[in-house]
Amino acid sequence: MIKLGVNIDHIAVLREARKINDPDPVDALGIVKRAGADQITIHLREDRRHIHDEDAERIVQLSTLPVNLECSIDEEIIDIICRLKPHRATLVPEKREEVTTEGGLDIVTYAERTQAVIEKLHANEIEVSLFIDPDLEMVKQAVALGAEWIELHTGTYANIYAMLNSNLSHTHHTIQALELPRHTLQEKLKESLTLLKESAEYGQSLGLKVAAGHGLNYQNVTPIVEIGAIEELNIGQSIIARSVFTGLETAVREMKALLQ
Ligand code: PXP
Image 1 (cartoon, rainbow, N blue to C red):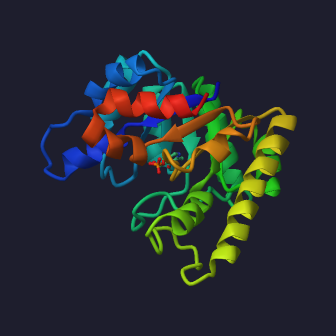
Image 2 (image 1 turned 180 degrees about the vertical axis):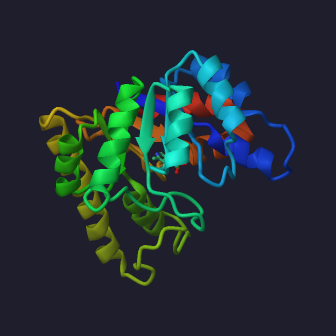
């Protein structure tokens, strides 16, 4: 069964709407575990717009599930991660003005810096995942840089899926496909799935552990689950959105049931 990491930083997004201390993402730890999730995922952003250092510290200390901390390769952030010692650090690109992460980390252009960060994290006994676009060159580079995991960016797939199957003409992703005819979108969806499958299988064949995430929800997750080489998904927005209506435990259970 594919593993589920739940991005609980969306709970902190809600808290930050009022800048008070409620709801507290720490309160989600027990509920998410009880519902069958396998991992807690949080993103400590450079601008601290949702998760704060203190949240990250309490989550790493109190979680009885492994904690996957997403972060940029910024020096100050990496020092914090090394002090906190989560089970895993997932290196992601970060732009201050973006609503959410908008693509994979370019580990070819930033090879030297990424490698130095990986070595530092390893010296602190933190395993490393690289959040990359589904691209064979990036997968190969992840091996060369010494990462244990890759997390394939599913945002493009999710975005095309949304355009095809909902009344959304676009999402925050910057794909230039707003006016594309239906059959072209269908082809693009197929292409995006093929890229994910090929990248996952290539990564697995090279000895990497393969995760995926971004934009996955209760409607679009099944074709991703069917890619056997992917062993873990990290999902946030759709689970926390559903939890407003169903409660967090049910929302996590319903997602976990789709990962069978
Ligand atoms: N994986 C990574 C690396 C991410 O940056 C995010 C977004 O925080 C997710 C997974 C989860 O994405 P979503 O909230 O769209 O499910």
